[in-house]
Length: 224
Image (cartoon, rainbow, N blue to C red; front, top):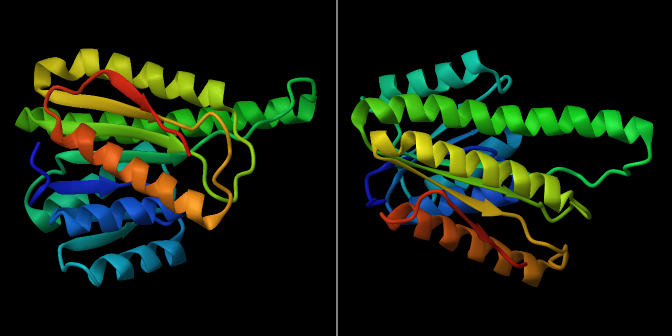
């Protein structure tokens, strides 16, 4: 898919990586929609994009529910007169918790469900809109943030891989491609130089998935 003039939705846009995605696609001359529940961080990302282009809109979310995501996509269609055709479905990886700690176990179940629901809801609503135009790309990206010392790589990877493969198979008939990027296997980018390199790799991998018309149903692993 050609990125120039496409409508790209970036989730978790208030995070450092979300902001990197937003500015990267802004430089590629897409119309970027940034969204997040973190209002101040979202405003910061929006301001960075406005320094690059006027083709950017900010949409704050009160929560990540089906009605909220539906309202967001309705708002985009009302404002731009068309649906997004690219979704960068970006979220933070699950934290690593002890298997033997019952309190941590309950916390893990809650966080696992939250990540799964956010990935699924945005993917589902985006796919419905894209299917009506028989065209679209969804990239599922779940990665560690620089202040996240440890994450549950195996559980996060399984979720992203499963969603990506099953969605791609189901959505192929609607000419919607789905790709995934799984998190790094080790946390070795805590210093600013490594983190910047990791951000660059993720954004360029996302761009590759979007522009490669033969890429679907697969995940790419990244190294920090």
